[in-house]
Structure formats: structure tokens, C-alpha cells
Amino acid sequence: MGSRLMHAYIGQRLITSLPELDPARFLLGTIAPDARYDEKEQAHYYTGELASGTRTIDYEAFWGDSTSWNPSFRSGYYVHLIADDIWLRGFYMGWLRQAIIADASIGSRYHDDFRRYNTRIAPFVKWNEQAINGALHEVSVQSRWKTLPQFVGEVEEDRRTVLPQEYDILLPHQLDGYIETAIERSIHHLGEKGLKIDTAKESSPNH
Image (cartoon, rainbow, N blue to C red; front, side, top):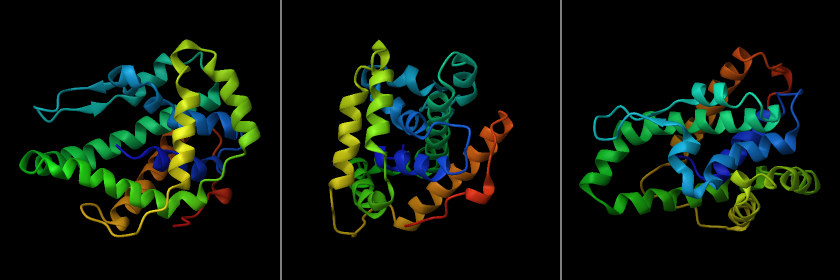
């Protein structure tokens, strides 16, 4: 799956095209699934099995289950699941899993590349901290999101970390492509859900 900051960056890029949504709640939604540390399987709507190669993320099941949620937070969460499914199918199940089976060190090494890539995109993740904190206070009173404030702090730490741009397993252009695909697919699916998409304000790549 993409890093915490990658999800925040995807959300940052998308929200400019979604005039009906509240930016702070949407951005919190884009990182929220990873904040449910003890409920990863449920939070990500996994289906299928890794061993049989059928592992996917059922983001449409999430959409059906979340009709009572705040629409901005819900849409951000949906985007997170779409992005994770792209990573799962296109990268992890496509080739990375077999590479890790052959060489277990690749698992930690590609996560190190995530951290390097965070340095590349961090300058473009710009949150309105007052709005984020207000939305966070509202959301975190729900028991399932009690760890979200801690998680937001970890994302902030990711933004401040600066690492040399020397990659090992994953190259920057591969991760750029992943992000662009996630944005394009999210716009498509959100449009199908009836959300207004303002393509004239679509954010262009900054990295």
C-alpha cells in the first residue's frame, strides 16, 4: 500500500476538483483507514486470499456500508481504498510479493523507498491546521477513530523528515505513476457516485 503521506498527497491533489466537499474532513478520510491499527482487515475491506492471488479491496462494499458517514470523510476514505487496491493489484500482487518471497529484505527496503519518496512530495502536502484540528476533534470522539489524532501526528512527522533521493527497489517515476493512476480512478469513481467534479480546478503534479 502507499505511504501515509502518499495518501495525504493524493487527497490534496483531488480536493481542488471536489467543490462540494469539506477539505479538512476529506483529507482526514484519505488517511483514516491506516489509523485503525487493530482492525486492518475490516478497515480496508480486504477480500480473497494472498496465497491464491485473489486478494483485492472491495471499496464498493465500503461505499454501501458507509451511507450514514459524513460525505466528505466518507469520500476521502473511499479514495484511500481505491488507491490501496491499485497498489495491491498493480504492484504487490503483480510482482512485489514474489520478490519478497525470494528475498525477505525487499519488504523493508521498498518501505525505505516510500520514506524517500515522502521527501519528494512533502512540500506539496499543505493542510489548514486549524480546520484539520477542528475536524479531527469532531471525528475522534467516535471510538473507532480514537487513534486518528496520533496518526495525524505521524503524518506530520513524515512531512518533516528529509531523506536523500537515492532509491533501491522502487523508482520515483513508478510511484509518480501510481499516484496519477489513483487520482484518475478516484475522479472516475467519485463522478459515478454523483459528486460534482470540477476538472478545470484539477491540481497538476507538483513533484
